Amino acid sequence: MPLIVWEKAPTPRLKIKTHQPLLITCFGRGGRPKAAPNKRLPIRHNPLKPIKGWLTGDIAKQMAHGIGRITPSSRGSFVLTKPDKTQFSVKPIDLKPVLRRDGYLYKFS
Image 1 (cartoon, rainbow, N blue to C red):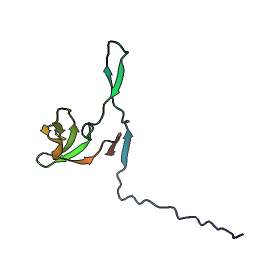
Image 2 (cartoon, rainbow, N blue to C red; image 1 turned 120 degrees about the vertical axis):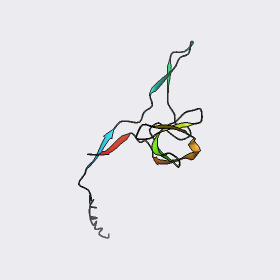
Image 3 (tube, helix red, strand yellow; image 1 turned 60 degrees about the vertical axis):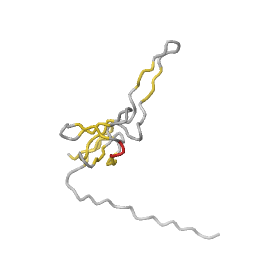
């Protein structure tokens, strides 16, 4: 019977090239419960679903207005809110995703 020798692989090292730590806060990703009353059945809750692949809080870039957060609307046009709180109505076809909302908040301390 041959002898099997297991060699331990070297542990990968992470080099940090900044002195500023990245703070990550978890906020969850669930949709708010939206009541759907019915006169024959008890109230049921339907969570909010993505509209055309976009969720509220996604960060996108639009050529004319720049980068901002998206608030999707089922009517067809979305609202792009820039960091200085200005809002623009944009079409979803003109948007390029920069960061999809994943339930975490990233910031430097």
